[in-house]
Length: 272
Length: 257
Ligand SMILES: Nc1ncnc2c1ncn2[C@@H]1O[C@H](COP(=O)(O)OP(=O)(O)O)[C@@H](O)[C@H]1O
Ligand SMILES: [Mg+2]
Image (cartoon, rainbow over all chains, first blue to last red; front, side):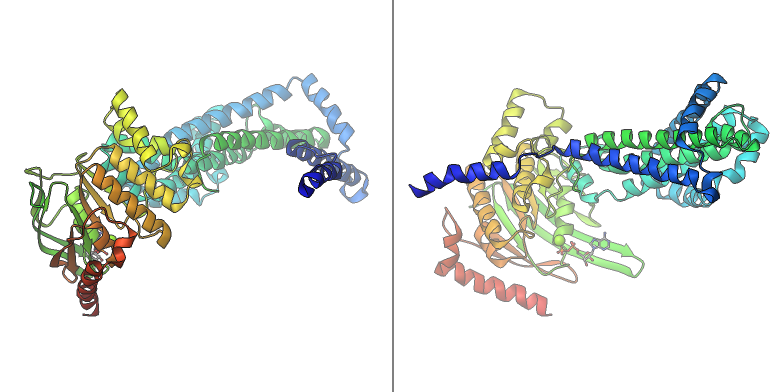
């Protein structure tokens, strides 16, 4: 009897205690908004402190630079040109890296031969061999795609290789005793088991593609975000420079967000 | 209990080559297992139990000798020989149902009867509610149940099990032992079951193969004439304890050498 009487009061009380429970997504958005607001505040502060003002044009002038650069007809073509090179360089890099990594993991001799090459070339900053590529490919998208392809291929091959090598051999045995042939094992065991590594490779590859591109463009190009920053620096035109830097950041973070979204979809089976 | 010979292990030897020289894992193993017989194998760690199981499964090749299954020499893996591994070996990216269905998928069997069999074995191991769950959401005991259902669903005539309950806590192990006994009594299959637990070897087996190490050999084959149905209470009977004393002495003696 008593518990029956106290129950409603309790429920009433707890309801009263937490009248505004924000859903986690709203909470996250609120924090993000706060973070961005504080960032703009700090930026604005830096733009008025004399010793940093030269590098930090105030936010309003950077916003105005959007109009200026669109007016000059370069903003969209710069973004387009950069994304074009990033996308193709990355795609070629990935298409080469996936089979290379898997073959390396399956045939030890191949690993022994090309493994050291990959380690060696990977230790060279791509910027060092850009001029060498330009000699035969010329200045422009072709050279950029080649350089990005090389850089992303290397990082993705190493990552995917690790994933394939780390596959639990018992899983392959289990598949075999259930009647799987080599082809089935490749499709139904190797690929899904390596998927988390493949996605990590894609994320590393996307970051590498962007950094490599900006570096490659600044040594000479007809258009592009990196090239424009370089040419604006000749005239100390800091507002559009800052704008371009922010755009590069937005592209990077957007790519990463997309990949993470995809990752969550395909690896929901994984222990975290 | 004498029936038709299902599996014959004939003069099986296995030598591994390594940098430190040769290891003879198995030396001239001979054993015949009848159709629907339940044989348990016990012996000190490293005596070649897993090696023998892998050779029977066709996952490894013997250095000499042969395995005869249904009067045919074994060459590689085959769907008439199913395996349950100690580490469960479930595909973590597949749900419980997809794991159990893997064998049929490899065979491209999309028949209604096949689908019904999948559901029946998931039900048999009591995991119908978890058919859509991923292995990470299951306890160790549940995972091993899925692995057993997966092996059964592929409908092998011989079931090879390598310490399947070795990683489980005592209570779960006892439960799964009884479930396995019930299943075996219901749907007869030839079972080759490796364990390092003397009680488990006696409770499950109709015969216990005691192995010795360096090199791996069969030391003794002990018949277990305990009545069915067997359950955890069987472990308290006089007959059980007598067998346990004997097997214990043999296994312990082998380890002490
Ligand atoms: N792939 C291998 N290479 C070399 N030696 C091995 C290999 N697999 C097993 N061995 C050796 O063979 C012997 C038997 O191993 P195993 O069959 O795993 O024993 P058990 O399962 O009885 O513990 C051990 O001495 C082990 O070191
Ligand atoms: Mg073993």
